[in-house]
Length: 389
Image (cartoon, rainbow, N blue to C red; front, side, top):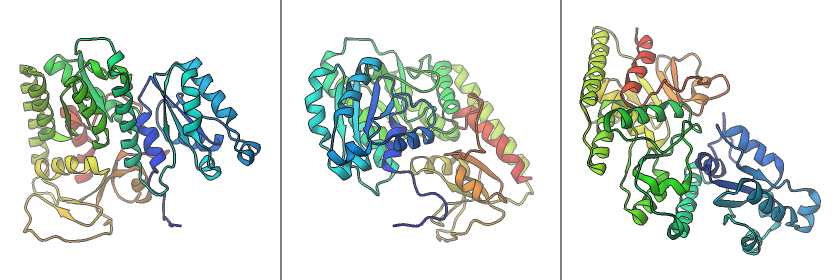
């Protein structure tokens, strides 16, 4: 058994539920005790009303009875009418060797939803594998029902991997929504909280994935309907420009004059930041975010803001380096932390900005304070600048 001085990394199960959180036409039924689902619902931000546990009791564990699983499948299908119902094992049901696949095979003719099974989950796999598994199951579902979906005209942009599940995710999503609408005239298919129906993937004109784990779903949409997609995280000006260039290339649309004007304003704000930094001792930034966002945030900090950044592995990145790699695994007292809420809370003596996975004392109320996109870059400088004075 491993020992952690804080909290262990999120599990494969947690990653799966975080990925499935935004899907409005999907239900998940876990063959397990109520406690495991209560833990999931308390650790996944946003909507969890489509996640269920059967409530395994001692008698069912002893005799391997699956009656309540069968009843749960029927009840969820009747009440929610999901297009896809994912039936998952739990650590308890795996111990007793319950044959969930056999149960779903028997129940499929009795329900309208497409039943999919995920059991025998790896014990030590991380959340990113769980997210990828969720997107793979969604892709398989779309391939299964593709021929039954009605013809439709491509309508707008679909964003995968950014929703109320993420800390500040709604604000970041709204900035992408604003950029697509204001600069290209394309609406977002995601609702105000980032949620969407898997069946609506076909309606996308272009798909943006902000985490690589969503690639299987985007690739399936391209294979089935020829929908182009792009993987990127728009932190800072350069990444925002790359996002807009990808959207223009994929859709054939051209950004309007407002884009150029807003881009000039954002560049002016960054020049003001550099002016304010003149003759001041720069402070180092300790950056620890999920791998899919590390490079984008680091580029913004080092190339655009000209700050020195240390990664968790001790590698130091800066604007001008001599090629040498230094290692310093200790967070210095003067470092500014850009990291998870947990790491920030463990180093309260350091100035910090929580970028993901907040703790209880860190909560966002506004849906219009992004850190991504053009307005996000300006907001970031507003939060960050006081630390440098």
